[in-house]
Image (cartoon, rainbow, N blue to C red):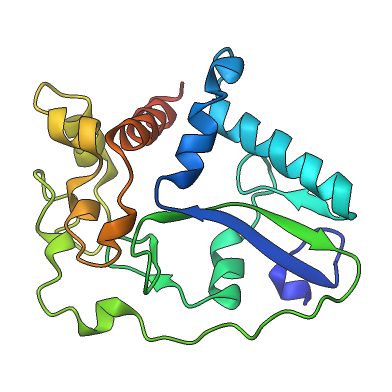
Length: 200
């Protein structure tokens, strides 16, 4: 559909992502080879998906790079039962907040795919919403995410838990506990986040 803004107007789009730490284990085995780049994980993902796409006659698309920036969140909501969480990121009924969309494969032909599951958002039945109160600086206490407060805390002297283990608000969610990222993976993403906010 034109509203989906998929480049080239392919007949089928298959989302590619990860849940939990398994992808990180694969990247960790080769990340020294990408250490010189500004975005080593993105560079590795690009290499992997471009190779897969070439092998199967697809085109690889990515949520990074651009412009234009592609609407991966919208595509994901059409592909599987994910919904915006109170933190803004998409929540999955099984994986919780511990998943990410790393790319997509666009095919010129129509592929027969299973019907997307439909599940209500787990946030709808979460009365306590511990994610909103777990942040040590209350970055999610209002209707909008207070990015400066979050970044200021992460880059400050008391950031050890968030920087070393990952966002406390995200870790407070009871859904998908079996898929929580390892400290090494969480720390990598937190450093990338603060670097991006710093303009590095």
